[in-house]
Image (cartoon, rainbow, N blue to C red; front, side):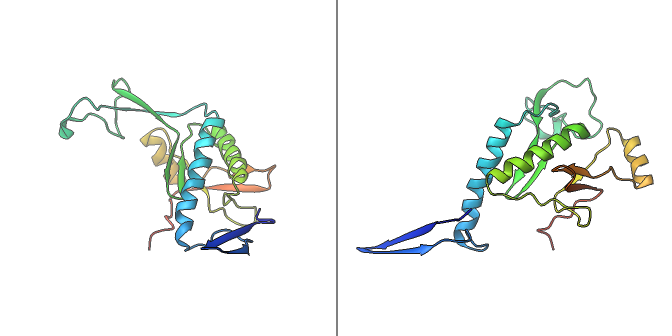
Length: 182
């Protein structure tokens, strides 16, 4: 990736060149800003190149200015409720992302497309193998409270998502471990 790269420094009339072999180091002041530009370019181009067939749809009620009278909620929202509709297929925060799919098939398709797309930018999606767990994980949320309770009783997870002709895996979890917490 960094073959035949040199950085040119100029101070006054003095010029110096330094061979550039391994990118920006973690902890370098420029690394966070450069990463944000890169991840934004990667995710924006991904959303324009990948057709997400089953974006999750949510209803919210912005017309009522009194926050105590807002009717939108995540649980027990009546299905006949009207309101403004928003479709969300991903949420990003710095180097973490959540991609929402409504079927296992679309999740598998999205994961493979995202893996391939990020590689075009030199970004690596942390996937596992049969011998090693993946840092990227998937979580399944059943459609109803009853199904959730049944799922929790049996403590059974869905089978791993297979990527790259079954070479790599993304496993399902029941809890997310946020790596930035203590």
